[in-house]
Length: 604
Image 1 (cartoon, rainbow, N blue to C red):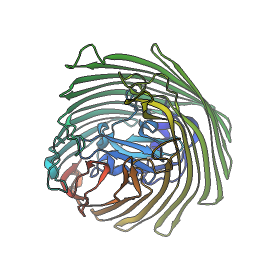
Image 2 (tube, rainbow, N blue to C red; image 1 turned 120 degrees about the vertical axis):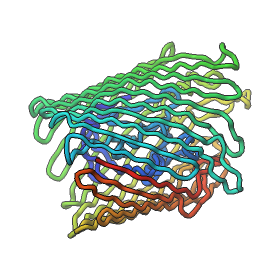
Image 3 (cartoon, rainbow, N blue to C red; image 1 turned 90 degrees about the horizontal axis):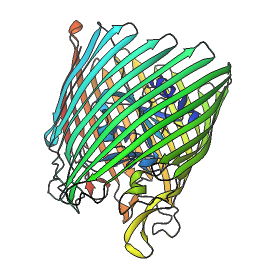
Image 4 (spheres, rainbow, N blue to C red; image 1 turned 180 degrees about the horizontal axis):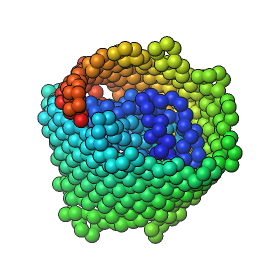
C-alpha cells in the first residue's frame, strides 16, 4: 500500500490524451518505466464509460448510477488492481475493491492505466488562468431517468507559483430505466454530493499539492433482476492528502506523500443494518540519487495503517461485530539506466503486512523494464514483474466466512510491445502493439467445506492464465480552424480458469471479453464539436455459460460561444447507447438502454 510523490509529479506531466511514450516513475512497486495508456476525462461521460475505451480493462458495472463500479486489468480481479488519486493510493481494507462511483470524476483531467503496475491513476485537472487571477466553471446537465448534474469550480492564482481551487458537484437521479421486458429497474435512485479543494505550488526545483475531498451518497441497491432488493446504502468518504517533491542540486531528489482517509458505509436491510468504519493513514517517501547522467538509484519506503470496525445492527448486536487493524509497508530499491537508444529499469521490493492478533505476510518482488529505440519514433519495449495481493479483512475475518489461513495471491506480469509515434504533415500518427502473458497463482476463490457443502469459505486454490494482445492506432490533425481525428483500439484476451478440478477449467473467466473493440472519432470547427465512440464486447462467459455480445454507440454534439472578456458559454447534448442495445455487463444486472443528456456550461 505504497505510493510516492514522484509518481504523481511525472504522471501529471505526462497527462495528455492517448500518451504512448513511457515515463520513468517511482510508483507502488519501485522504479519502472511505465507501460501506460492515458485517457482524457470528458464531462459528458460517466466513469465506467470513460474506462471502457481501454481494451485491456474490464469494468464491472452493476447497472445504473447507483450500481457498484470496479475495474481490473488484463485478467486480474478488481482487488488486484490498484487505484490512485494524484499518486496516492485509494485503499479499501474491507473488500479490496474501490467503488469508482465514489471518485470525484468531474475534478479530474485524465486517467492513466499502468499495465506494469496493474493500476489506474486519476489526475486532478490543474487550473488554467487566461484572463486574470480568477477562473472557474459553472454547469448544469439534465436528462433521462430524472437525472440532474450540477457542478461548479473556482480557482484563484494567489501568486505566480501558487494557486488554490475549490469545487462542488452533485448527482440526483431516479434511475428507473425501462428493461427489455417492459418493466422498470427499481430501487436504483441516487443522491450524491462531492466537493473538494486543491492547493498547487511550485518551488525552486520542485512542487507540492495539498488536497481535501469529500463524497456523500445515499442510494438504492437494486440487486439482480432475479433477486430484486429493497436495501439501501449510505456512503461518507473524507480524504486529506499532501504531496511534496524537491530537488537538492542535481544529485538528490526527495519525494514525500501522506494521506488520512475516513470512510463510513451504512447498509440498511430487512435482515439488519450494518455500519462499516474504515480508517487509513499513509506516509510514503522516496529518495532519488543521480549517480551519473545515465544512472540513477531510488530508495522508497511506504507505511500504511488501516483499521476496520463493523457493527451488526438490529439482527443481533453481539453477533458479527468485529474490529481489526493492519500495519503494512513496502521497501523498494531501484536503478534506472539511460542511454541514447536503450533504457533499462530494475527494482526489488520487500512488502510486509501485520494484522491485529493475527499473522504476518512477507513478499519479495523483482521487476525489470526495457526500452530500445530502433529508429526515431519506433521503440521496442518489454517488462516483467512479480506482484502480490494480501487478503482483505472480509476474506480473513468476516464472521461465518473468513479464512485466517489464506496466503497472498501471487502473480507474474510480462509484456512485449512496439511503439510508433511520428508527425506527418498536419497529422500526428500513433500506433502500438502489445502482447502480454500474466499468471495468477493462489487466487482466492470461495468453495464449500468438504464436510458441509452448505458452508462456503475462501481458499487459495484458484489459478488464472491470461494472455492477449492490444492494438492501438490513432491519427489526429489540426489545421486552420479545424482539428479532429480518428482512433481504433482492439484487444484480444484469453483469460482461462486453470484451477484444478474446477467446473470451469480452461474456460474464459467470468465477464472478461475475448474481443474488445473501441472506435472513436472527433471533429471541431470554430467551437462546433462532434464526438462519437463505438464499443463492442464479444466472447464473454460467467459461471453459468456464455453471455451475449454487446455494443454501444455514444454521440455528443456541442457548441461554444466566446463572450470575449466575459468568458465562454457552451451547450452540449449527448446520446448514450444510441442503438438502444439491452445488455448486461454482470449477468442479471441490466445496463440502461438509450438515454440522453444535455447541458449548459459557463467558463470565466
